Image (cartoon, rainbow, N blue to C red; front, side, top):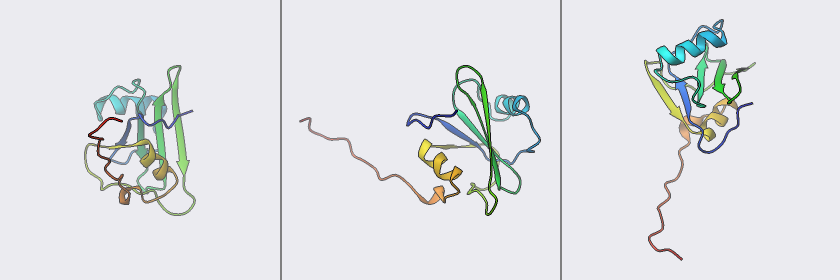
Length: 117
């Protein structure tokens, strides 16, 4: 199970992947193409070419977790296809998985208090 905690780092692969790829192949893709450690506890998100399916890959401390979600209608909101990665917050990931327009939502800036007490 992937816990959506506030300090969770979510890495979104901008290029679509072949959805026949296995857990081992996606782990290798994280290492080689995304230049990240697949066992670091971050969540790596991959999309299909049609953008109606996503795969999440994460190490939970005792094993690798692979989650697949397929929308029966519509598509997941995805940034433009290009090389590299996009980083999301846990909230943005939850919105993405719910099929919502996460790219149109931005957190309001909160200023740090100047005075204590």
